[in-house]
Image 1 (cartoon, rainbow, N blue to C red):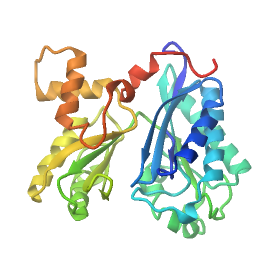
Image 2 (image 1 turned 60 degrees about the vertical axis):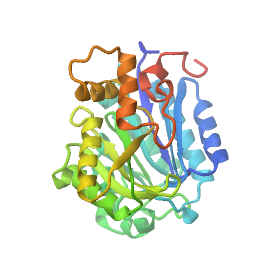
Image 3 (image 1 turned 45 degrees about the vertical axis):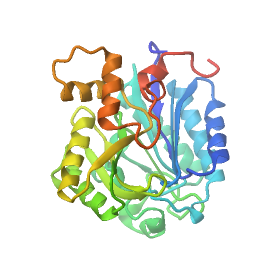
Image 4 (image 1 turned 90 degrees about the vertical axis):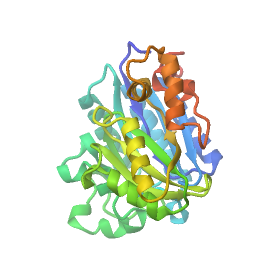
Length: 328
C-alpha cells in the first residue's frame, strides 16, 4: 500500500449518536473499490463523527461523493443540537495528500467532488484551506461563522455566496465545506472543572490569532459524557507546533485560573512521530525504543483519561501497513 498514490479523507458528519446512520455512511464508503476505512470516532456530546479513510485518488472521489449523498439523506440539520460548531450534515470534508501524492492532486480531487455535489445534490459548497479561491476563505472557522443557524442569512450576502451549488438554503442538509489540507491533529484537553468559562479563556489564549501558539485553533466547551470542561484544539500544521507544547501551555494557563489538566483525548488518527517528539522533549537524550517512547507519551499526555487509546488503532502508519485496500 505504501508504494501507491494515496489520499486521506477525514469527513466530519453531524451525527454522533445514531450508530445505524454512521454504519450506513461507512458502508457507502466501503462500497467503492480502492479505499479503506482506518478509523471511526463518534462523539455523543459533540454530536459529530469523524471517519478517516484512505484510497487511490479516483476511488476517494467516488467514496467522498457516496458518503456525502448518504449523509445528506440520513442526517436532518433541522433537529441537530451538539457542542461542536457545524454548518451542515456533512460539515467539513478534507482531502489530505498522504503517500506519493501532491497537494495539487488533492486540490484537483476536491474541485471535482465539490462541483458534482453542488450540481447533483443541490448543496451549497464552500472551498477552504488549500482549495480556497481567496485568502479570506482559507480558514475553516471563518467560513463556518454563523453555523447552520446563520447560513440562510449568509447565503443572501455577496460575501456568503458558495463556490459551487445553489445560493439557496437547504434546510435539511445545510452546506458543505470541502478542501485540501495538510495533516491535522484534532486534540482535546480535559480540565478538572466544569466551568466552561475557564475552558474558553484558555482556548482564547492558545489561539494563534490571539498571540498564542502557531497554527493552533481552539475553543472551550463542556462535555457531559466526561463530566468536565475541555479545551478542544486543532493543530493545523504539526511542523510548527507540537502536541506537548499545546498540552503544557494549556496546563500552565489552567493553573492561573485555579484549574488543572487531567489528561487529553485524540480525535481520529495521529502520526507516530508526534508521540515520539513528546517523549523526546520530556526526557532528552533518552535511549528508549520507539515503542517505549509511544507508551511514555500516552502517559505524559493522559491519552487514556476519558477513553482508551490503542496505538495500533490510532497511529496512522500502523493502519496503513496491513492488508490491501478494499476490493483492490
